[in-house]
Amino acid sequence: MIHLNKFCIAICLSLLSYPLTAQQRGLTIKEAMSLAGAQQPQLRAQKEETKATGYNVAQARNSLVPELTAGYQAGYATYNNVTGMTYPGSFLPISGPPVTGNTYDPVPGSVLTALLKWNPLTFGQRQAAVDKASAQYRLAASKYNDALFRQQYLVISTYLDAVYLLKLSESYRANRERTKTGLTQSLVLAKEGLRPGIDTAQFQAALAQTEMDLLGIQSRYFELVAELARLTALPETPEMIRLEDTVFFRHLPSPEDTTAALSTHPLWQYYQSRQSVTAAALKEIQRGWRPRLDLWANAYARGSGVAADGSIHKADGWSLSHKNYGAGIQLSFPVFDFAQVNIRKKQYQSLLLADAAQLDQVALDLRKQKQMAQFNFEQHLQIAQQSLVQSSTARFAFDGLKLSYESGLIDFTRLVQGQYELLKAETAQAGAFVQTWRSLLDIAVAKGDLNIFIDHLK
Image (cartoon, rainbow, N blue to C red; front, side, top):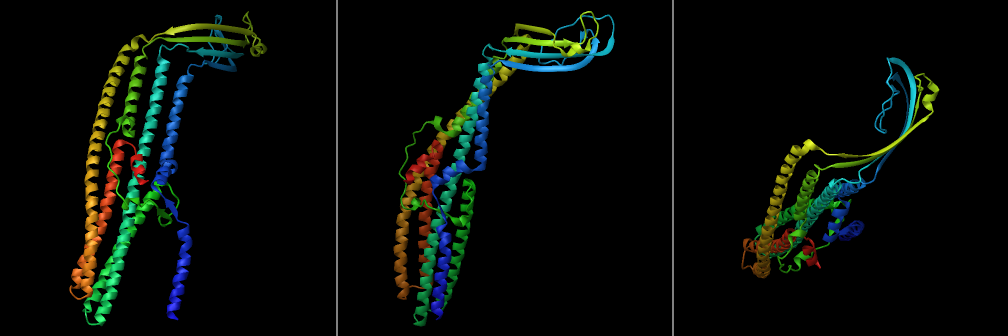
């Protein structure tokens, strides 16, 4: 009856845990990379900032459109020198008739105006502004691409660490089962008088240590999955996420060719865009010391409470009885700005040289990074191949030690040492395989193309 109750309880627990397992979300590396770019709030914000920077190009080009300002004004002002006052800005002022003295009586005045201003010819200044805005947009876009690249790299790196711990937990579970089997055998052998009872106590202590090690690995695993959920903005809790890419422990990646163009690397593109912005700013400064051509046209109607003979007729201040229009052209040149423009030119020439040197440094760093990544990949690939031999030999040795222990030829210490060597070999193999894949990831990072890593998962 007791055994039946235990069996029923086990069935009930398994049924209760089934919906939780069914609701788990499978997550591949490719999906995690896509989520990192689409759902991560920080990247979404940077993407919108890049989009906003793109509108500066349209604004710079829109300066070719004429500016037309229409306005109406009405007010009271003193009758002195000019027949009424108007607020400046939307019309071109004219002077009025003089008066012999000061008359402080207020008179009404009104004006309806339309002022057209146009700069059809800027001698290259408008195009320089457009080029600078375009370069700034490319800089913002390259900054976003570099941030996305780094975020996706963090996703893959975290995923690899989590999968490694998942593989370690499998090895430690297998080690726990081996310890349980040893404990059962020691109990039987102790009853038969073939083994001392102390072996049972030692197996129990070893089993407890194995359980603690397994719990520690599982704790670190869930921490990494939680970090992965943060990087991908997933709402699920760590226990609800199942990592599906486990190909890393079934085969090793093939060697990679190191040839790749630096111009495609996101980091190199970012520094190149910085250099382009500085060059565009220098061109804008150089063209700042050029003539400026303005076309204007103005039409307006006025009403004044002062008649032609100097008498005051307040009702006429609202009638808009006098109409005026005019058009003209203005060519201006900042004569004394040469010194200031020359200083700014020298400043940005130095900044341009600094950007060029920085770009050369980035190119040098990426070439060395690629060489080192390729070397590390070849070394870790050889280590992983040797780890297969080590784990296979350790497993064969443990099977032999297990038979020898059952036959009474060796003691507990020798058996546990062989079991530890097997666990060490299994974890070393898992670590060597993951390190080889990580070296492949380093190659992909050095080349600026994470698809190099992703394509090996197929």
